[in-house]
Image (cartoon, rainbow over all chains, first blue to last red; front, side, top):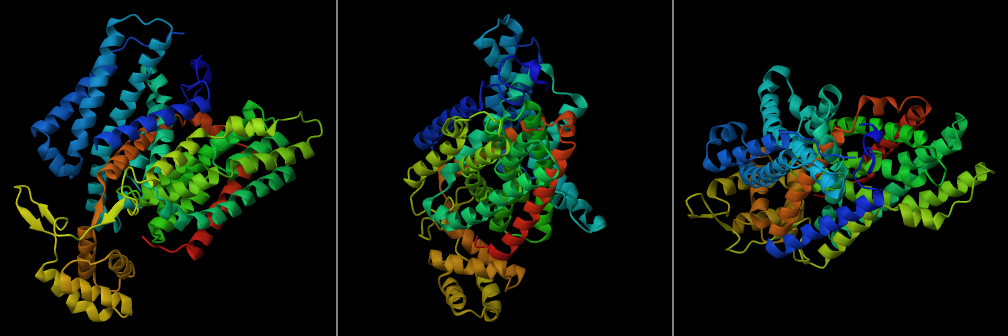
Length: 40
Length: 528
């Protein structure tokens, strides 16, 4: 997939930066962990 | 730019997923499930089928019935198609191709003399990536799925963070020192060799610097993090990433084959993969390919991998000093700013999850590797399909098999543990369990007797429900990431690895792989 196909993110990610992707992964993980803690 | 395409495919895939889940639930798929031996996956087939099917149907209808406008809503909606596409491929691979290939492997064994599916590691992890590579290079990723495919790295990172929930302080204390020493030697050694080789082959300093970080530390992330320090051009970063991915893909296929042929254990292979494979993404792939039905190898490999990532600030500092010395004209680079700005936050997330797990909120603190010992009467009783209680105590045949070969066990501690097992029909302590695991690993007794010991082990080891859920979630996040990763490995990105960086990167990669194999083989013992 060529880089210029997307005007947002890069060829490898939908996020503006790696840092933002890292934070999203962190938030997603914490939500999942909370759900597992509460309901399992 | 409007990303959402007007297409019927997410809706079609969503309907197919819901239909499949319903057929599993209603029992219509029973003959197929029985034939493939995927009965234990029936639960996740229904949950994931309904969940992703519903998402696909809703998003598909929105795509068909609304007119997308440039904005956040369009951007988010356009990602759903890719997610559904990846999951559809993952379902086919994990619930169809994987068990089918395992059956073919077993069926061809008498003719070929070996199980090709096992030897070639044709499990869902490897086939997932291969499916991705085939799709992108032969058929091309459909336009409506392209945006969503770029979410695969988010899946990988989320998987790595969640993996922290499976670790405990006791495990890190056990593996920590070894991983730090091993990784320290190989990371610093690799960076040093790349810098030396790069200078010898007259590569530009910026190219050498970014390749050194990529080959030495954790692949793509490290290369990107080190790029501003050595003022690397985008083409140099692309060459480095191409080299790392190409070499990493080769390692991902070759490492498990070598590991299996050498009879490596989980800890040994995890340590080797975590040390010797260049890119974080492919470490997990190799570990899962080596042990598709368990997570022990992955956990060890990730501990080594995370330790390696923690070396990044040191390498960045080293490269900065090295580069400034070699390039008199190099502009000033704020090292603290680079480290603070580029250090991968998902590594901190892993540590945070590990800290949460160590408090005992997911499983009691005495749990080890997600499991706990319990030989109480309640724990030793299970229920059959009809709800009747079934005892997990060893039966007369089992005890006879052990008694017949008890004389083969020579070590006093092993003899005592075996005697206690025979007397009580169950393992009486964690120590006894560990001691007799040693008897199994050393293959002192026959396979039949070893099977009895494994049965006794399984009867007293239980996995906490929360940990079991984390394991399933992690496996799916990694599966999602692998398939998507495969869809990003184009032939052109592989060709980018050509030339000097490929030569230098490959030389150092091979040295690192062989050196770490030797060290792990000699120094790392198998204790699981």
